[in-house]
Length: 263
Image (tube, rainbow, N blue to C red; front, side, top):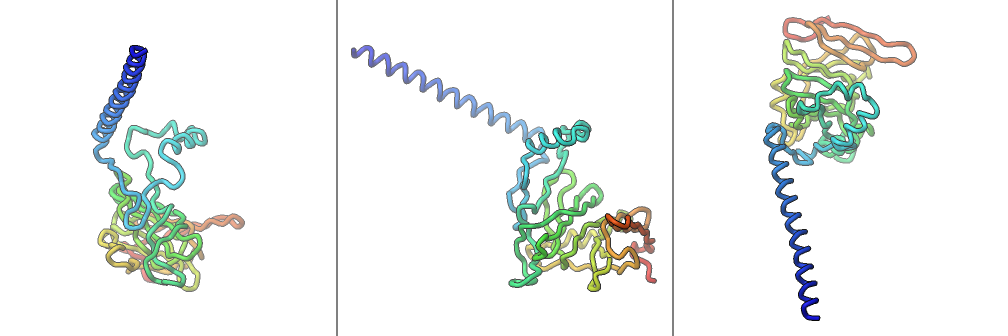
């Protein structure tokens, strides 16, 4: 009887040692795999979930889930993407929460956190930065610009604006290093305003706790509202989308400084 008990104990210990050994081996293999992943893409580093109160993680899908949905919904697009190149696509920041300026009371004009930012426009600066514009759907916060590193997709910072406009149209003038943003004036008419590259790079929402200031802009004679805009060969092209009456497109020639000519 004693021998049987000893045999059972030995058997249990052997099983336990096999399980522990398997766990150790699996852990070592997994650690080695992750190290190889980091070495393979040294420029891609994990980022904190929040950077200066702006979220940097996906709001809807993980990378794996996004690829699956993309393949099922847009198989032709999926087949033409190069997934070996990093990043193939970017995580849009601020969808879970974003730093912004409060538009409505209480705390009007003060820094806060918006949970309803809706991304709109997109611009690329010298393949160095990716700019995404967004507005608050509830109109309780002013609009923002999110700046990402173009090569890695890493979120850099939030730029707070001093308006609740749709900011659907943004474009970058590579010739004069100026970002143009479609806004609306006090009469609810279309206007465009600009920021220089130096102003964008110097701005620090965390330190300044106030919106960036547009130093150049102009009211547009047409269209009455702006849906999109782009820059090409010293001209700003402004368009308006209308479901009923059709769209409109206008071109404005800039002066030597890259600003609108005085009328």
